[in-house]
Image (cartoon, rainbow, N blue to C red):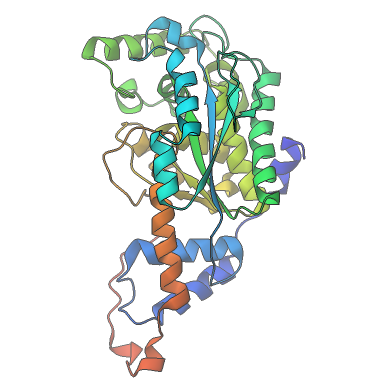
Length: 360
């Protein structure tokens, strides 16, 4: 389906079942709210699926790999060749996301959507748009047509996963320089200061960090119109990986598949999708709170809190793999715990210890 039809076809999740799930979870053998994030996660998943009890045996992390022309400006600590190297490492099973996904019982698919190299690796999905983006300091990162194509390819991968029986999607990416593109997009969307939107990425020296902010500021200065249109901003400052992740969020929302958001790059992509259609938030679950400073803004815009604070900033979809285990625990709670009334405990004697939550 065309991405424009997908955007129009997204519906809100099931608020009635959300309420029913909350009531059912309150009836389980525990004080109301005492399992915290597990309860909130189960309630949101119920609203997505339309059923109080769920099981997510088939989980998949989609990892979109692309290079970024702005790396020529010295904004990253690693050379762009590392993008292609890491693609190979993921598929060998030795990358961070590879081992964590395996530990969580999840599969990964790695998609070349714009790596600046000719890759012939077994298991790689070939959807290359270009050999990396343009240098956004000097020109638009991509054309409007390429931006739309990147979104469409993300949607298409979600539909393929759905047809293969996957019940939950995690969002991953690999691309040297993509913390720069993400910071640019977040700054342009929000007009927040660079101090709040720009971090050191995978690891920059203080001098390189200052230079990164200078490049971002110069790129922003090339335009006077201050547009907030997500597609225009993706064209100016984005990456093919970010466009594809936007498509993943849109596709999952359309198909009513829960989608787990990884860290900063995936989080900014989620904000972009949210600005395209706010209903996509109904189908998102944040995973971990990235150490990148801009992630706080992501949480504020989406009005969601990432449950895991692991001091992580790797990306790749690693946070999704960890969140999958939390989700499995939430499903075990709903599906297998006994109920108060069946085990001689009076529910009226228990105190609700919850703080106000977005899930209730």
